[in-house]
Image (cartoon, rainbow, N blue to C red; front, side, top):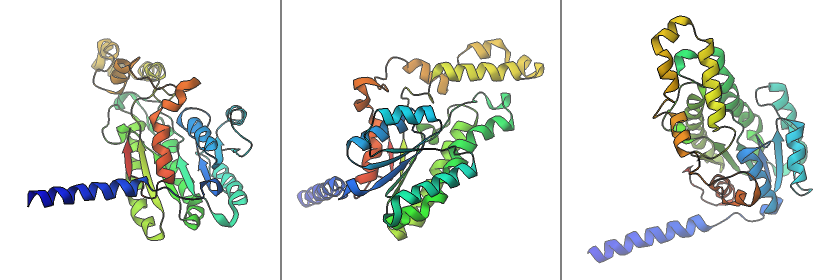
Amino acid sequence: MWLYAAALVGLCYLLRWYREKQVVSHLRDKYVFITGCDSGFGHLLARQLDLRGLRVLAACLTEKGAQQLRAQTSDRLETVILDVTKTESISAATQWVKERVGDRGLWGLVNNAGISIPTAPNEWLTKHDFMKILDVNLLGLLEVTLSLLSLVRKARGRVVNVSSVVGRVSLLGGGYCISKYGVEAFSDSLRRELSYFGVKVALIEPGFFKTNVTSPEKISRAIQEAWDRVSPEVKDIYGEKFLASGFPGTLIGILELSEGKNQGRLGGTAVKRLPSAQGVIPALWDRAPHQALLL
């Protein structure tokens, strides 16, 4: 009996392995739209998909970022300027995408644009500090997705939302962790709604890789700036020792402890070793992609 049970479990794993190894055909004819391509994972992903022959539509916040990306890719890749916090910018980018994909629709939408500051203990921040991050990481992602959803549905394609490990456990105050929890919730509900139309929704949850978003220097500077703005009463409650502690056990403490241990680098030959880009790629071309991938 145990032998039959073991054989059945082995068969299930074999079928699962075979299913996960199946990839979508005719990838070179498919369009993928990526936000946040000026630097970091978006920049890396755009380059890697271009190398694999996909038709990449890369959204950058600045013309400088767009020029740098075009200089490192083939003529297939096209760029557009996009500010995900502005409705008119999203509308213009949506029309731009429609003109390029035509009746084929949009195979892949990768929502990657994001920021991590201002961040600090919650009591040190204002509503505006929270909204600055939520506008980009959550509300911008929502509006971009809703604007392009009809094109993704037409292609029976994929929506890939870049969340974070802090979308599972909150490690620091401010809007970043809140925004990533929101991305997780939106993705889960969207997945259930769009499965009826053959559209798959995947979450990518990177850990602590060296990007602008996880720069300990920038996060420390943002915390110091928030401290400088708080009232004398709040400073008396927390004290300088709290500020100098480095917030052990929180995001900034973990980033400082991991400094130099994470070998992922953006740029040079090490770019190919960054697992986050490798995690997004299967979400776009596997026939049965994972719903969420923690990296």
